[in-house]
Image (cartoon, rainbow, N blue to C red):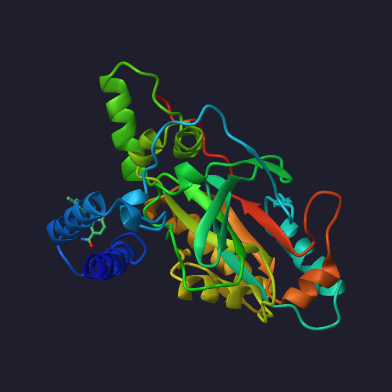
Length: 317
Ligand SMILES: Cc1ccc(Cn2cc(C(N)=O)ccc2=O)c(C)c1
């Protein structure tokens, strides 16, 4: 039995690593058949020794029975919405206000604004214990069983401190097109856009359905993170990546508003070449102390803004 326990641990570690290479790095080191063969081996061992199965096992991604309803979750730190900017002047105004609200020079971080569903993940003792929707920012829905099916979300990380991270769950273009083709083949109503498809998939009560939707995620922020010594948003992004969490690689530090505007115009052109939808660019003050100094208006931070791309003209059928 000790041998079985060692083998289960070894298989779990290697399968989690293969999964990370494939779904987070998009760079597998082994063929799918090797991954599959090791998964079968682990399933057989867990069948023979059921008490060796843990919630963190790669065999436990797709939960059992469908839920009757989603539980409510109170976010300890509210998941805020961002104010919007629609043009260069709005961005220049935002940058001026941010610089006036603090005495040190302000550095910005620009990130792509993924058009999906904002979610929160909580890890305790390195284990994924909860996944929730943003909801109204204070109260969300517990969709842990559905988020566990997203292969790029690790079921365990090497961080013993409790950490609550935030990001955007989304459906990549290819998955969206395939899903709608399937819907049309079954004479079902197709989804209007990838955002609705992702939201619809995560609101399924049956995790087996969510598991088939090929959802993905980019994590971009932190809610509760005790004892964190980090001083900038960019350090947090780097730490999330070190933990094996999937972050969007296109973020960029900008020292001036002109660099921000350059980033915005670059991605306005490049946007069609991405394999996921973005609806804008998020610009944040990088330094966390300056974020605190700037604080919030009634409903959104003064230290961040969302530049929204002009709405595209409706695509004629
Ligand atoms: C049969 C089978 C098994 C696995 C996969 C995809 N995949 C591959 C790996 C891998 N190569 O490291 C890791 C995780 C994973 O999900 C497919 C498409 C088909």
